[in-house]
Image 1 (tube, one colour):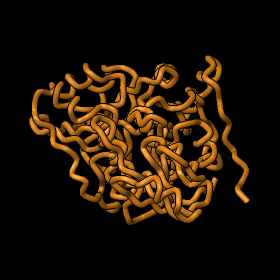
Image 2 (cartoon, helix red, strand yellow):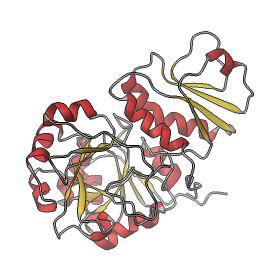
Image 3 (spheres, rainbow, N blue to C red):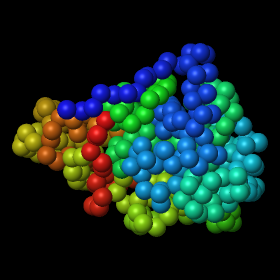
Length: 341
């Protein structure tokens, strides 16, 4: 039997925001909505509060946290900025873009896994921005789920997975984007590197910077080595059910498969569909597919299938971000933690 959830879900009323801001100022954890996925937030300048994030998630200390800010002036307080970072911030903030820059001493080492750089972004979710203003703090906030598991895109996902480990969840509705932020490494601005694809695409970065941007290498990260930014490990975003990837899945073969096999398509397959067939969007929209990916993986995971066969996304833009998450969900290595909430 699962332990009773200790978490309470709060609507975004002025009174609730005031209360949750005080909880953050006191060093407590609050699950918060962002436009990408739900995050588990703490005062980014309080080492003890940030260690609570790692403990609640079961996250290794080698996986750094992203710091969320509300005002551009806060970037210069936390990091050594540069012209490339300012151009990208002008173009995409507030929004789903994280910048990795040399950190300033005010940022605790626990936030950066001991590395001399920090990952920073300015989210666009209006409720989180109001909470950031009321708290008056930068907030460290990785995804609000057990380490390695599928990221949450609703407050209910957070309650299901983390309800026994945290007390406060701010409900801001379903995440608009549904995949974690794009991360770009600007420690050496003359050689920018895309570390994690997201809604801000490689083409977007190259267009704004006017220079070549190195694409992700897909080389596995090592759990024991401190990472430059989150989302670099080979296995991540993983359901408990094993995932197997396919360039294309023939719908007829999926319809005739064993009942313990789940089949995940980018768009609704033509013809007869079986109970084991799922899709990310009826018409194959990449934006809607990205928004639905984690929720659909969670739903399949809860239905008790033995395997998930997933079709890789096709097209430009968000397809690379979707496929990045699918590849990491299917990679061998440390699997997701069981839900203990």
